[in-house]
Image 1 (cartoon, rainbow, N blue to C red):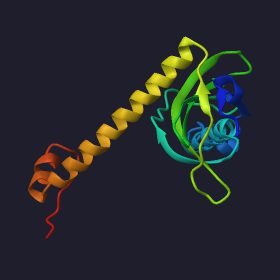
Image 2: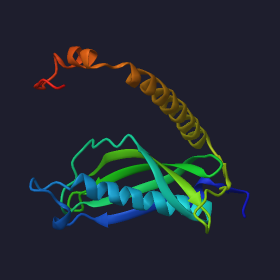
Image 3: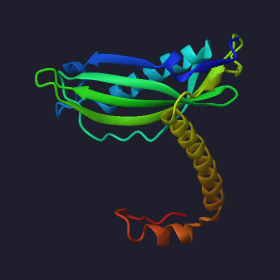
Length: 184
C-alpha cells in the first residue's frame, strides 16, 4: 500500500448538465439529486485516495445557498481535507454555470466522511495525507476542529436528552408552532 498521497492526487471534479427530469415542480433541481451527485464525487475522490472501496458514514452541513436551474452545468469539486486511520473527510464545493451567459454561482459546500473497507468489509487503513500549501493546512485544521466540535455536541446532546421529561417538553414546546394533545 502507498504510505501517503497528496491532496492533488485524488482531487476530483464531476460536471453534469441539469436536465428537466432532475427538477421539482418549481423548476429547480431537487435537493436529492444534488446529494446523490455529491455522494458520487465524494466516493470517487475518497476511493482514489484510499485505493479501496469506500462508504459514506456521515454528511456535515449541506446548505442550499442558491437554487440550481434546469440547463445549468453543475460542477462538483472534491478534495481530501483530512484522513484518520480508515476515514477521510472530503470537502465538496458545488458551482452552477449558466452556459448562455457564462455566469457562475457557488451553490453548495459540504463535507462527507468516508471510510475505506477491505475485501471482507472491515475498515482498512488509508494513506497519510500530504499537505502542500497553506490552504490545504487550513482545510485540514478546520476538519479536525469540526470533528472535535461534532464529538462534543454528540456527548452534550446525549446528556441533555436523558434530562428531558414530559413536564420539560411541555414547557419547551409552549412557544413553538405545535399543538399539544394529552398523552398518557
